[in-house]
Length: 134
Image 1 (cartoon, rainbow, N blue to C red):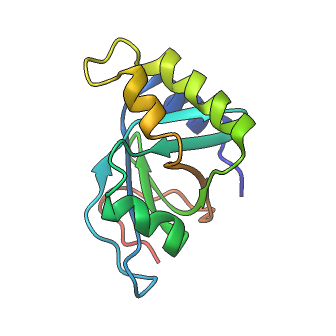
Image 2: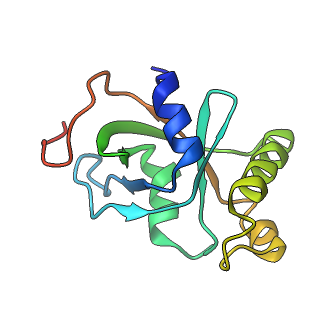
């Protein structure tokens, strides 16, 4: 399933994107955490600046989880990005969107280039923050 155009526009403009991969059982989520997210073409991409992050390691390992953006929750697929051309485009999008953020730096961008995940919704129904997701 692709992201709806209006949702992509909101992700592109806002900084309200949270994510949590499922735990080892493939069904139980932890707590949602806020992450930087950008849109490239029709995809949403996130990254971690911490290569030792257990959450990031769980995302490509479990390949599924929950995302929340602008109050809408989706079950989602997580795919580790290895294509160097796509990584460069994602880096450019992160630079454009977050370069004014005091936590952003070219060094952080370089360190996290191997830690980019593409997020694709797999639940057709948007749910609110209090709805249970299966």
